[in-house]
Length: 258
Image (cartoon, rainbow, N blue to C red):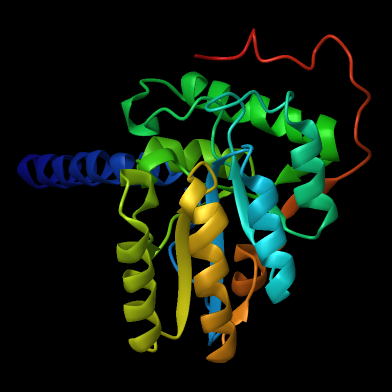
């Protein structure tokens, strides 16, 4: 009887030891942000533009206007330019019905950051700037270089944001010649791919003044809808929409993260 009791006790302890890690894993599960790389609506292409606001933004807006398209702009806080110095550019993007998303404050590879606080420091000031300038808090962010890990996804989820990458790269960020970028778009069109999120950069003069003007009409003529990322995913572009702020001493990039 003593041996039997000991065996039953040992089994009950073993069951308890096994059960505890399972319960702990469930308790510690952290929500991760969704990651989108392509549209879901058939025959839709979302032209996206990174690294703004920039001086070539006007040319892109004019090209979009000519073809009757809406684009998506993933903006930095202080990368090529300080967002507060080009606040009218941000207003123009918003007032013309294009989508604005976050591309972090200073464009670091988020995978290299060691803590959640460092990641938040790259996202929070962009949201603050967009609320001040146009009164919106973006529901989507694009990680620089398309790089992320579970910590980045966890921080984004805690902030109510999803991640957006792409499934076509125009190559303008690495200086691909215009003819090669056009050829890549032509090959993409010929492939008859149903849905596309296309990566471009508004810091590229050839993209802004030549490439987009050349390729967008081709996709429209082929029956594609030229939509925002939010539109092609059937999601809301913003978490909050409010009243823009009034310029004051806080409208500066000098105190932001490096």
